[in-house]
Image 1: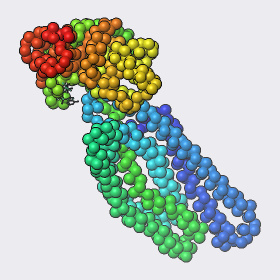
Image 2: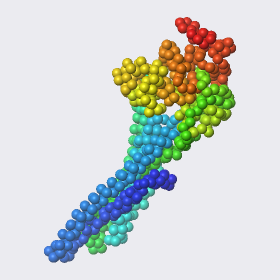
Image 3: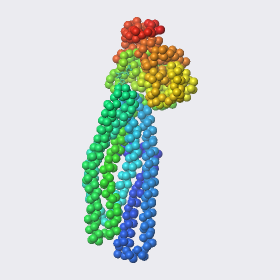
Length: 591
Ligand SMILES: Nc1ncnc2c1ncn2[C@@H]1O[C@H](COP(=O)(O)OP(=O)(O)OP(=O)(O)O)[C@@H](O)[C@H]1O
C-alpha cells in the first residue's frame, strides 16, 4: 500500500530501531502465554492433581522454582514492555521530526498559487494534528495491533496444544466478529475523512478570527464571529458524535461476541473437565488466557477507528509532501551577481486560474530609471510587479531582467536582486532593527539607521520606548499604518538591490513625509531601477515615465508633462487631486 511504503521511506535512519520495536513487541506478547502455562502446571501438580498433596511435600523446590519463574517472567515482560515502548517512541518521534522539517521546507518552497488555494488553518492542522496522529499511530496503534495479533495467535496455538476441539468451539465466534468489524470499518471511513475536513475548517475559522480580530472589533462583529465559530464547532462536534455513535451501533454485537467466549468456555470447557477430557489446570489455562482472544475482538472497533483517523491524516500529509510548485527555487549555488536592473515586459498576459488580469503588456525600463504605475483599483498593478520576482509566471509573453527571461534566472539570485515593499505590509514579531535588517541580517547598525532615516522612520523609532530594540507585535501591531509602511520601505532599501519595487508604499504617510521619502529615493547612494505603484500624482510626477493601467492593459505611457498634455486618465487624476488641495503639483512635475 502506497501510504505504508511512504511511511517506510520516511523511517529511514530509524528503520532498525523500528524493526527492533516490532520484534520486541512480538517477543514480549508471546511471553504472555508463559505464566498461564506455569499456572496450569502448578494447578495440575500441586492443587488438583491425583498426587497433589504428595507433590506439595516432595517437590517443594519445583513449586518454588515455578513461582519464581512466574515472577521472573512478569519482570521480564515489564522490562521488555519498557524497552519496546522506548524504541517505538524514539523511532516515531525521530520520523515526525524529519517529516515536519521536510513539510515545513516544502511549504516554504511553494509558490503564490499554492498559498492562494490553501487555507492557513488547514496547513497548520496538517503540520500539527495530522502529523501527531501519524506519529501516535506508528507508536501506539501499530503496537496495539501487533501485540493483540501475536497474543491472539500465541493463545490459539497454546489452546490447540491443550485441546483442539475446545479451541475450535471458541474460534467459531471469530468469523461473525470479523464480518461485523468489516462492515463497521467501511461505514466509518468516510466519516473520518469528513471529520478531518471539519477540524481543518474549525482551525481556519479560529486562525482567521484571531489574526483579523481588529477588523472584527472595528465592525463590532464579535457576535457574528462567535456564531460562525460556534457553527464550525457544532459541525465538528456533530461529526465526532456521529462517528462515535456509529461505533455504538456495532459495539453491542462485538461486546456480546466477546462475552460469549467466556460462556462457551464455561459450557464446553466445563463439560470437558467433567468428562476428564482436559484437566482442571488446563481449564484454568484457558480461563486465564481467554482475554487474549476476547480482548482483540472487543477492541477491534477502537483499532479500526484509529486506523481510519490515521489514514485520513496520512493522506493529508502526503498531499503536502508531494505538492510540487510550478515555480521552483532550485537554491543552486551560483556566483552572487549584481544585476544591472534592466526590465522588459514583452507582450505579457497573465491569468489567475482562468481570469485574464494582464493583457499584452509591453514596456521597457532602463537600468536606474524610475517608472511609476498608476491605474484604477483592480487594474492589475500589483499583479504586474509580482511577475518580476516570479511570484507568478506569465501566461503568455516574457518578463526579462537584464535581457534574460526571468524563468531562466536562478530564483534566489533574481529575488536577491530585488528589494520589495508590498502593499500589504507584514512585519514580524521582532525588534524594529530586526525587521529592517530582515533581508540582510549582517548589515551594521549605522546602516539600518541610515535606511530608517531615508524612509522617514528614524524620528518616530527613536521616540519609541526602546528605540530600534522595540519589539513590534505580530504583523506590526503597535505601529500606525504609515509607520509600518516606512519600516517596510526601510527594509526594502536595506537590501541594497539594483531593482526596487514599491507597491503603494507611501499611501498612508502624510504629504510632507512622502516628500522626504521621494527626495531620499532620488538620492539613493546606489544605482537602482525603481518601479513605484502609486495613486498620488505627487508620487508619480517625478518619475522618468508613468504607465497607466486599465483592465490589465497599458492605456497611457509617458512623462508627467506628456501625460498631462494627453488629457486622458492621468490628467483627470491630476485635476481631481489638485483641486482644493493647498499644495499643487505643477504641470512640469515640480511643486
Ligand atoms: N491571488 C489572486 N487570485 C485570483 N485573482 C486575483 C488574485 N490577486 C488579484 N486578483 C484579481 O486580479 C485583478 C488585479 O488585481 P491587482 O491586485 O493586480 O490589482 P491592483 O491594480 O494592484 O489593485 P489595487 O490598486 O486595488 O491594489 C483583480 O481583479 C483581482 O481581483
